[in-house]
Length: 282
Image (cartoon, rainbow, N blue to C red; front, side):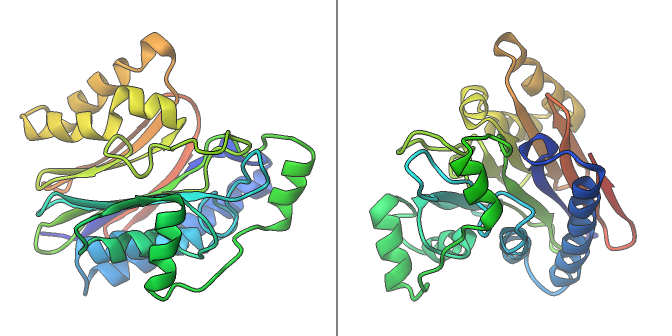
């Protein structure tokens, strides 16, 4: 099996839409996709999905990890999840504060009995596991918060990976939508926004409430598993968002190596690579 992966960096509408910002995001996605593919050649899909999202979290151009949105009370709370296709095991953190890489905390939870933690419990687990205190705020986010602007409305990062053994994994991380009510839960640490099995892996971005209502990731994976073509599984799932004008984007990778994407509103930024060719899209 030829190793492949796709990554996404949320929607361009989440930030300034200047040509300079678009170019910077596209270049970052190419760099991260290519670095992650090199990593994939000697690691599993699960390890690679976590690695790629870690790199995306560390880039302040994206709304995850460093550069995450600030909630209505002035605090940054992040969510992330990872799922392994072969075991169908899922772990995640919800509304986690003061860590650099939420996806790595989700990875650490993967071997635990209690694998999805939120708020204070997630933070205590992170500290007990040795993750140091870290402030993910950048000056741009504070400026946006103080001005009560929503320049970064729909932001998430994610990766779906297929390794040489044919195993799939999906990982997703978000800094939230910005200025949201305290306690709001995004889709990223749920199976609606991040899902994988032995047949298909999906990572989503967009409005979390719409993605949860549409069960987007789960529906696409289930339909591929049940024999739908990749295109028909995606098309049917996105058609079901139309009655409420659902705002969502998804990257999709199957066990056959089929790579696909869809967004309901322009423009999700994403990249795909098979090690020979790297393509970036908006």
